[in-house]
Length: 146
Image 1 (tube, rainbow, N blue to C red):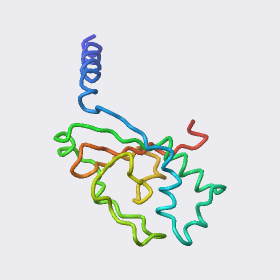
Image 2: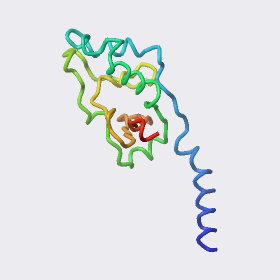
Image 3: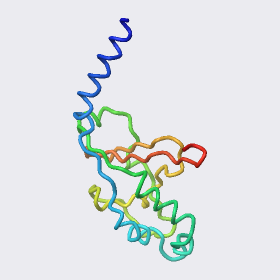
């Protein structure tokens, strides 16, 4: 009985505190997908990511359904142990001119510029240094997982 009461109190507390920790969730604008892909896959890279390719379909599904941006309290994020975007290398294999973004805006952030965990089976959470933003990448699932 005592354990049940503790569980209920914990649940209520979590529900009350959740809006304070994770204030807003946004998704990338699907209209940016082709422009972002073209920015990263230049030259020979354009051959690997044509609209009829499986890679294109995978990346589009990831962009539209698995990536989100969450705002949280900046002080709490500073004390958390998340991967930092500054520690993730650029994916500049096809475009050597790619540079890290000077600032962060979810509306213009190109996730394909970075070696993010798109193929992972666990949720990836990356803190954008110096901001109150987290980039969350939901895990890759197979048909058997659904």
